[in-house]
Image 1 (cartoon, rainbow, N blue to C red):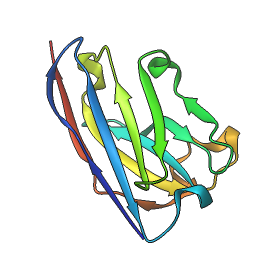
Image 2: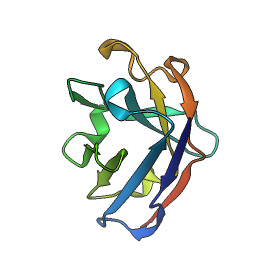
Image 3: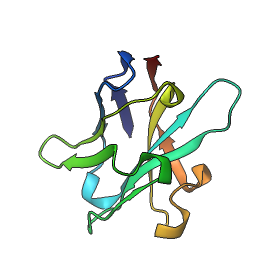
Image 4: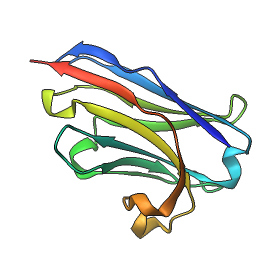
Length: 124
């Protein structure tokens, strides 16, 4: 099982980035994929989650309307489109595989496998 996160970079406030999480060793249809982020000195927090099979999507309140999670099953890849980025979005972003119930998607211990992270830096 491998998760490869990519797409991070340096962007000005108001800009956009699209993160990718390429999965291998399993089918996306069988698992949920969550995006988390961790800023220096802060705890890891849930950003978004796409639930297996149903395709239902979930977002943290501060990301609603700005971030969009999507899945390309043919490429076995999950994307996180991030628009209207703010300096407070600066963090290392991780994707992770799990099967949490909907109410627990933000709990990092619900995920068994993690990608290596990709740095997102938003300048003001």
